[in-house]
Length: 637
Image (cartoon, rainbow, N blue to C red; front, side):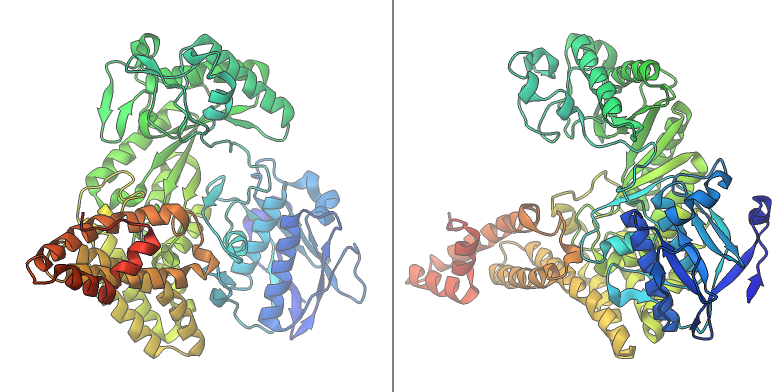
């Protein structure tokens, strides 16, 4: 049996608008056809489809390479299995990761130009035909409605943003989360994607530092020739003819060696050490000293233009990618437009849009860049390693909609999530990045209903409290709190966090066993957040009586909850483990603890036996053990 579905777009493409049953009344009606040479992304998509149908109906569809299944079963052909049949009929304007699903009485063909399109088609079938959701990168949050029958409808898929790259997703289920939410998989070459701080690889200190110091930035009268990577290697001199020649040669060599790639990165090194030689300064001066940093846009974009024009001559159809970032965030004053083969990714900390003035400046800048380049992308930051809530579904989805309306074509996000409070923000962002017109209030209602059932009102109140915490009125600051806890100390509001914890507790009391497990998964992360907030709250009274004891007790609780947190691989990324975490967390603690310990020592010095009192204090408070484990000196000095 087939069900006719209205779909004018599909009819215009010459496709029959059917929804073909693949399971009827608990019986298999189809088999998944997957070629032996299928791409890993196609294989994973096929496994997703088989898994979802089995979870929904209890029916396991067979998977095989046969083109004509026996027993009256219809084929669901995935990827290469359909390539020869319909590749020539794909719409000419179909994006690289768009897809066509042909659903006909004789079978279903899932067609695309790349495996990325196949994966997106299957993910859409899961979302729309089966109601499958994966709200967090953990099997606890896989939602599969029960069904007796399943039908797959014909459709044409075109994502709103040309790519939707997220970095910082970790853990066993991260790849499934990304795939099922139609995020971009970089295992497939992505058109117009070629970024990353790259100039240190082209003009490296190792290759040129000894013999050609003139290739590097001149600052304060001397050439800065040091560094091994993009973080510590100074910018090259953008006006030096040999630097320009070497970069052009590197770009041409890259395209010759990588015929499947269309973009070469000219992104600046990740530091603010720019050249101020007479030649560069003649372009950049008078300097624009902005809150984000001094601007060197004139010398940099003159360099970019030179390279781009050379590549346009030797490699038509190829591009150079740049970040409009930090010291080159602003468009150059000396040119109205960059060459058409320049792709600019404007970096914006859009969660700072809690400040309307900051938001308006960001959006004005984005509009100016949209008028200067043919290809404008954005590079945004949802994470930045905050321990206390940094989240707002409203801000990030408003930004995605505004970008789509303004001409932004693609988005890269440093997401680095803290799942205890950012789940609804990330899920809503995936949906709006795919479809900028998506109904966000409905998506958030669905999120809470599906995940938390009868506890949904309390969990919605919990997430609302976390968002209210972040939306505290204050001036927006670019990269606020990056690698420093001071910003979180300044705005920490333990009253709001205690309110959020109360909602979690009430939700858990109202939940069934499965939902309670989900809430406890969230609670594990929030316990760490609460411990950090209480630690920084204690630090505000550094030097007062008993503060040292409070700080040490709260620090031990941070340490304990952090260890529990890292048992979940979803949290094991650069911001929450290793030296970066230690610098941010324990690096901050050292100063308020030193102040408090010295104040306590001053009290003890007036006692008859101060050293004995000190020994008793360090033993009972745990300070002695703490100093040994952290390798810190005696904080009395």
